[in-house]
Length: 303
Image 1 (cartoon, rainbow, N blue to C red):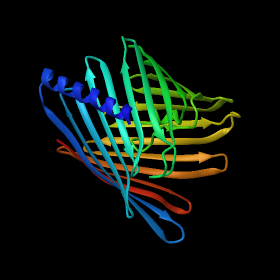
Image 2 (image 1 turned 45 degrees about the vertical axis):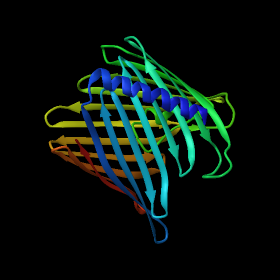
Image 3 (image 1 turned 90 degrees about the vertical axis):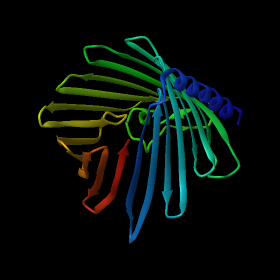
Image 4 (image 1 turned 30 degrees about the vertical axis):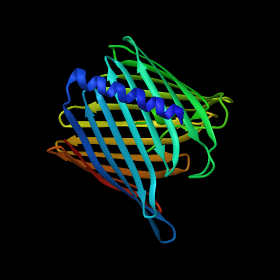
């Protein structure tokens, strides 16, 4: 597509300009992650993710390859460059044929932060006759020295805006047919050296969709974080609640999260990681009363 070609060409020129102007110090991350998901009655799905990230002179390139026992599931390629505070990022997804292209620009003047994301996505099934649609996300944020931050995301032809702020590399926004308002997400947070409070409100064309509220307290030396979060649905009824506890004693980090709903216990997730000499080993285990729901093990090497 012409959009892909122009986006790739523009970013390639910018990467070269940044490299010439700032030097070529190279850094990177290599990682492998295995996900085991039991499927009743006696099947086990195994997925593999291979991540390679390289950065130099304010530019970065990331590749995330997802594999299953049947072969390639998806390939995500992301490129970005920071030009004196203006950040340009672009990416493509293949699953295994081309399915998504996006381009994002962010910048601003303190305390304001402005951004926009444009995407072209194929709504058809994998390697079927293409059915392209477009979407746009407008991003407006403000952050103060007192620890207060406000962010607004508005999606046209795009849903699942929460995935832009959930810090999970395995999730992403999705396009829908047409080009009109789909979601508005408002995030308000307050952070100090020992306390943080976050709230997220999501609105769709019908009105209020859900709200999420999290509060946590941090203790230094050893670092301990304990807190709770809740999500309320459109009727202001409890969707789920979570209690979490994190402990970091170098080089080990532990985190436990217990989820409840109105009927009681839903699931337990335990994450353990060990970091030393640029290597990080980690595991995430999720289970409920029926047994294991998912097991993730992996490592990353930073160089």
